[in-house]
Length: 104
Picture 1 (cartoon, helix red, strand yellow):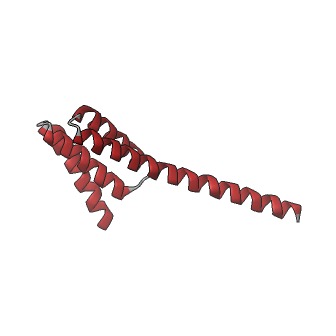
Picture 2: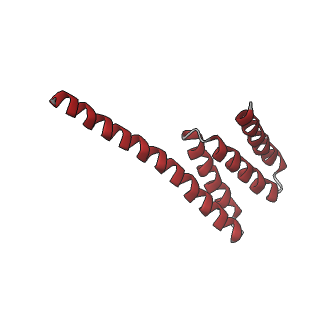
Picture 3: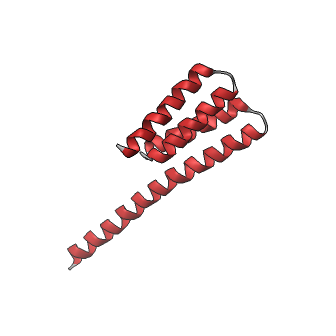
């Protein structure tokens, strides 16, 4: 009985930890995306790119394909606005590749 209780307790804490980690990654993605959006609004594009790349990093770590598509597109758009078309193209292509992988 005590072994079973220990096992259930271990499962509970492991599940809580995994849920917290997943929630933390999603929260980090949205926070960095909001910071990127704010910096775009105040025309601070270097910080906007920095925060968008942070959001992209967390979406990759959490293996959140939809967030990766969105963040790659955001970084691409920021580089496009900065007239850095080579970088923009690379991020747009990555966004498109991830988008295709969702359906196939």
